[in-house]
Length: 273
Image (cartoon, rainbow, N blue to C red; front, side, top):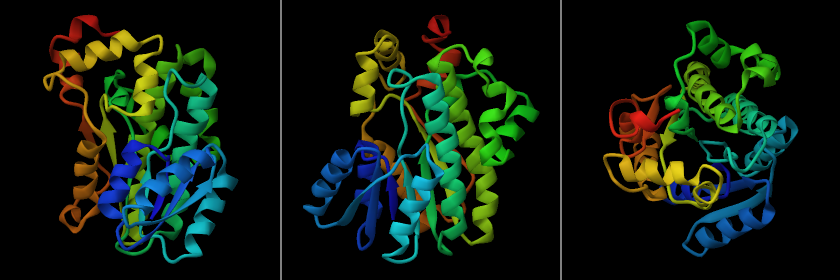
């Protein structure tokens, strides 16, 4: 298993699906990767930390090469990324959009027959107004090294870091659809999960950031009336990555306690932007 992003959601999924495997945990911070490996290794898993930068194809390839030293790659869990309060527009696009596209592309070249993957997107991609069919096609199929040159991703067309994040997450979902076709040629499957407010260190950064009140109100006003947990995302990943999800590929699953429903048709509708 390749796990990118040494956080709570990735760890929860790895604990569901990574038993009996070598798990290569890639993160920009070796301290974070080492901490996750220490936690799950003490629970009986076999994990190895690896320093990687999702914004770099060279770094992604090094991660894949390390994984292949231990056997065939049969699972990918991509939970790496940065949030609107953590990074600039440029960094969000380079990491969350370009980096995810490269990772899906490169793992798709080596994934074992019968292999599966999930990438963590976000409810934010569902809140952004619909793009044109042509824009969706460009996000889905543009060669990875040309993605950041697309007109809709140029600075003058992006309002702020939230808008950049929404575009990145919309791209993740479209990219998964296109990659599902390529992965299918190898007998493998890939899907995405779009979580809502999940209590993780990243979410806590958002709660304490400039849009903290917005996010706190979002989970208070959603039908579930609370934020979610990493394990609730892992429930969905377990379905998608197990044989019970064998007919599911190229799909995105919104796991947000109904926040998006409220945003369009409920209490959050009058407060959205």
